[in-house]
Structures are given as C-alpha cells and as structure tokens.
Image 1: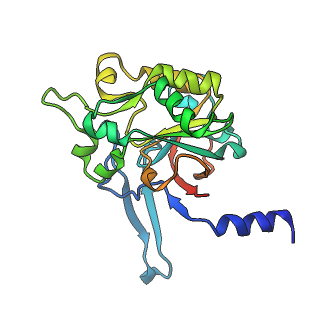
Image 2 (image 1 turned 90 degrees about the vertical axis):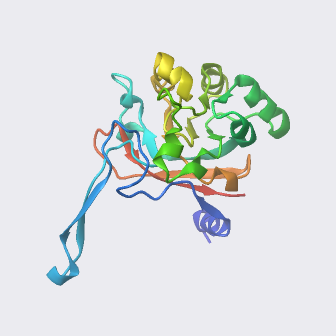
Image 3 (image 1 turned 30 degrees about the horizontal axis):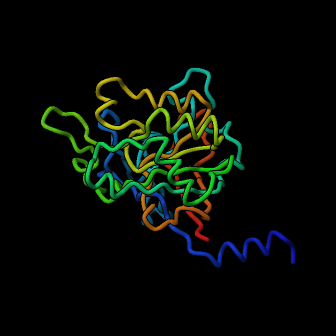
Length: 243
C-alpha cells in the first residue's frame, strides 16, 4: 500500500467539519455588494439542467487574495496550492465576545493561547473564533448596527496580526465576521488591519462557520475554490479535518 493511500485512509477516518456557510440569494453579505443571482438556462424538459450563477468574489465564506486591497499583490491563482491545506489553530474568544461584541483580539490573547497549547508553528492557519457565525443567516444580526449605523462587531488588533505574521510566520488567518477589523475602529479609520494583513502578502478567509466544532489544535484546514484567472477573491468550501 502506498503512503498516500495510507494517509487518505487515515484522513477519511477522521471527523470532517464544514467551515463554510451555504449561500443563496438571501445570504448576508457586505451591503455595498450585490446578492447572488441564480437562474435556469436549461431545465430537464430541455434534456439537461444548467444553471447560471452571478456572484461577487467576496460573498459568503470567502477568500481574499492580497490584490483585493493592495496594488501589485498576488491574485488568487498565484497562491501556492500547498498553502490551501494547512495546520489549523483556533483561538476561542466566544465567551468574551458574548459579553462585548466589540472585542478585539490582542497579542496577549495569542500568548495566553500558546501558554496552554504551545507555540503556533510557522506555516499555520489561525482562526479567531467568536461564534459570530451563529447570527447567520440574519443580515441585521451579522452587521449588528447601533443607532448611529456603526457596526458593533469583533476583530483583530494590529499587534496580533503583526505577531502572527512577523514572529509566527503564519500562512493565513480567518474569522467569522465580514471584516478583519472590529466595527468601531473600522468606522473611525477604515479597514486598516485588513489592508495591513493583505499588504504582508497574507491571505485570509472571512465569514467562517462551525469553529465551535473544531478543537484549538491538531486539525487541518482545506480551502477550495474555482481556478479563476486574476481573481481578487472567491466563495470557498473550507473544511476542517479533526484529529
């Protein structure tokens, strides 16, 4: 038996968790972008069923390539295939977010995580668990606007991203919200942390789900999407393979 078949049998014996929301025409999305559109071009009465989908790259659970924000950054098709299959680490701050929807993940949060679980190795994918995905599929709940129209939502701090990228040399990060940045600082200053992250040639996966079913360490994440030419982003099917 070849090594690959043995690895395949081991992986398929594990529990797999879908980290992607199912999407349709009513799915929550960034309000400046159009919703998915779907129509039948042919039906079985014609002899075969063919559908046409119209969807923006940043829709549902999706990947952002560096070019999404950064001139000269990598397109999706320039991301190495091996970088789409990575060790997965999940930092759980869902309890804190339940008390404070504007919670910002700090460098200390990562250091506290490592004190319990060990150092995050280079080449990993780090996910920020907030349980924000439990608000899906309610658009208003996902955005969580206050009376002034400011989004009240958690996000990454600059220092946390700098630590993961510069010192831990991660390949990518992910989260359950629409944005990298927390809602209040994004309203005040724009998406500065998202720009910083993509400027470092790091990709991210946004609007993840089911992180509550994934342990802190020991899992793998697989990220798949169509082989677009020169795409800034795409809806993805992200899957966690548990230990």
